[in-house]
Image (tube, rainbow, N blue to C red; front, side, top):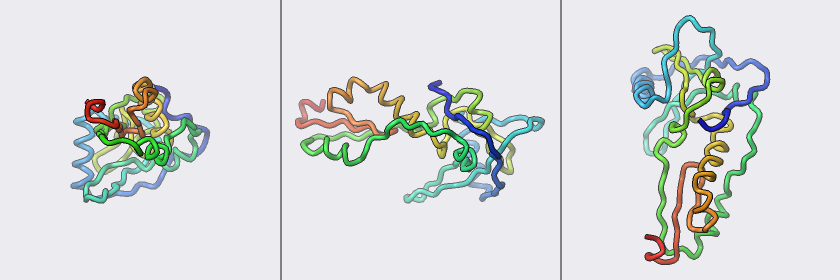
Length: 180
C-alpha cells in the first residue's frame, strides 16, 4: 500500500446508474475479480456507489472504469508533478538505442487502503463491487503512480538513462553497448 488515495471533502458522491452491455461488462467484472482488483461486497451495507462504464480504445479493446466524477469533484488534488512529454523528447534527442516498456495493468498492481476502498464501489446488474487495487479514472491515481515509480527508479532517472512517465518506462542510450 502506498498512501491514502483519496482525501474527500464533503458532498454527494452518488452518481446516476447507467447500465451497459451485459456480455462485455460481465467479461470485465470476471477479469477484475480473477486479478483481485475488485471484490464483491455484501448486500446489507449502505454504500455510496458509482456506475461502471466502458471506454473503447482505438484498437477496439475496452476497459471498465467506475464513474468517479462526483468523487473526483470532492477530492483534494495531489499536485505531484507529471513529467512533460517535451522534456522526455529533449532527453531522447541524442539517443540511438531506445527501449520502451509499459507496466502491464500498472494501476491495478497497487493495493488501496480501506478508507479509499469504501469510496470506490461500482454497481452493475451483477451486484456491487469494491476496488481493492487502484482503479482508472481516480483524480490522484496518476500523481500517486508517478511518485511511486520515481521513488523506485530514482537512481536510474538521475543517472540519465531512464525516463518514467506514469506507467511507461523508456531506457535510452547513445550506443548499443551502453544500452545492454
